[in-house]
Amino acid sequence: MPLLAIETTCDETAAAVITRDRAVLSSVVASQDELHARWRGVVPEVASRAHVERIIPVIDEALSIAGIGRSDVEAVAVAVTPGLVGSLLIGLSAAKGIAATLGIPIIGYDHIAAHLYACRLAHGEKMKYPCIGLVASGGHTSLFYLRSPLEMERLGGTIDDAVGEAFDKAASLLGLGYPGGPHIERVARGGNPKAHRLPRPLANDQDRIDFSFSGLKTALRYLVRPPGGPENVPPPVGQQRADLAASFQQAAIDSILAKVELALIRTGCGSLAIGGGVSANTLLRESIKRLGQARGVAVFVPPPSLCTDNAAMGGIAWERLERGEDDGLDLDVVPGTDRSIRRK
Image (cartoon, rainbow, N blue to C red; front, side):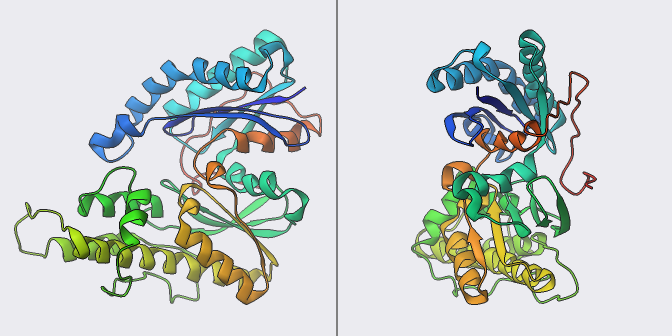
């Protein structure tokens, strides 16, 4: 009997059905991009209301695609940390309702750990522990030392903005759509990444495994709208926009690579896993693989469908279910960011 997983940490409403051998029978994601595009960022209240409307249809669709009914589910898993409190509570409420009705176990899982577990779903036992884990998304940019799927130590992360948020702001400055990452990548293909020398904050700091993207955003803003000039300058177009997008993308990825390499050197790990929405970026994926080859490190990258928020990565709950664990109906959410979550 399979596991039903639910994901509502931010602005995607998702459900998936995963078997004990980690086969994904279905994975359904209802995106809210169109709802938040006007603000070029996630509005928590809007996200919560959309989850309420979509959660049951998404769950039913996931079960239907998998060819099973609710009574065929062995357990239910739900992301409970980190994330937006309102969004998290919608998923938890649905999961508790199913668990209570069917009398089955409920497992709360860590959204960040699940992003990295997506590599295990994609590559199976080839992914060895311990390893370094990079999570890069709209809300997170952090590096972890993973002793096992459930044991992770935070090595460092962003001290200001997440890289995905930086891509969103860069896209806004360049007159591109939301979410920004895919638009920046598309436009950057026609640009010269060396056209503008943008900063790589903290990249040369060998004393800390941390990221910073605020200064990079500011540098791009000053190129688009110079200090002291008018605020209503129209966004750049054509080759100018392509060069700015390519230069920004290269600077952001160089900043990530520098800290990934530092983490590998410090820990001596022979494997590296990446996850999160920004890990779908082609340049980042290719650059990470080249870094791995240069250092003799095995690199594990999930398919794009497992990079952005989804419930299939909730298959991590099997790691606890196989131990006979059950969080019970007293399970609660722990909102916030990966910086605010205490881990063993």
